[in-house]
Length: 528
Picture: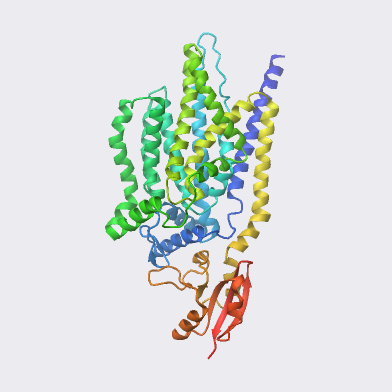
């Protein structure tokens, strides 16, 4: 009888473990699914082309675009793409591969945080007299943390893009998770105390390589704000570590910054730091202006489909503060409540610092706020776990919701996104021209600049003297230049709504080769 009872008790645990294993495979499969769609927007093609040029020149230091120096961002994304190009060849899949890996590592970092939080909470909740344990949170809190992060729309979208946002988000997440483990560890062992502190500074260095100065500003500012909210003084170990740890961070980042400075000097300082850091923050030089409250709307939407739980977590935190202050607790419960409050306070610090920082910036793009998303997901996971602990049906309902969401993502990637990508990208237009025997013809932009062509028409685009894509706003000027350069024919990318200006011109012979709904590619030959 005892053996039967034991088997019956084990079945739910085994079933639960199988479900989480299935989720693990589903998450990895979904994140790598559909990476071969055309590169989208202006950034993906440009960054992928920069990496291709570095790869072809075997130069891991100087980023170039169209042969001209490109000092807009650090090299970490390019290095990831170069490694992928070597492994898989130059392709959209390879360009995005590193971003997906960093997205999955962000999820894994949050899983580690959840695992540590569970272990510490159970240890603090142990009653040595009765040998019972407090069950807040359940032992699968880490799994829920990972599932909620993996199924958040913000992390899914930006992990699939060949851009710097997720490449910055992972090292910041890893560094802050390491700091929290160091700060909250009750055992002063190497694994839970000294190693996390080393990891904190190391990943700050990696974050500097990912996107510049925010990589060091955010972790330090978040930690400082956390101590301020907790009204805690720095402990001696952390205070002393600020000296050697900052040196470690700078040494880690120096693998790229020092060679860049030695090679390019003040030009690198001016373009990278002054123009693309300080001027981008203090002005709308790069035409990305948005209202102050922009990120306060974008960040919550990134938590979909878990948005209601995120909002509930904020409300719960407010109530918990008053409950903690007005309730008398036993010593054990006081430690537990303080520990739970520490994680929530840390997550809020992590959330607020980037929100305020980027809200004050003159340049705003949705991806900028991505480093704050893991903090929102921590709060969301706490709220979700309160719900799933109340009854098994609620747990299975939310797991089913996650399965449905992943299924919806796959459906969109298979049937909807490729249609949008075809309209946004000039890949098919360039391939059509190549198939018609015009693979060596130069490509020009008329009335608009197609940055998407940076990748698909590389080395064939007409550029200005400073290396930027040349845009012709006067068709007659383009024709005169063709005659002056003695070019017999050229490919023109023109907005479809302005096509008549080309096809009805009496000074050229025009042949439409293809269109994608927004852009048309035309072969023109000047008439003699």
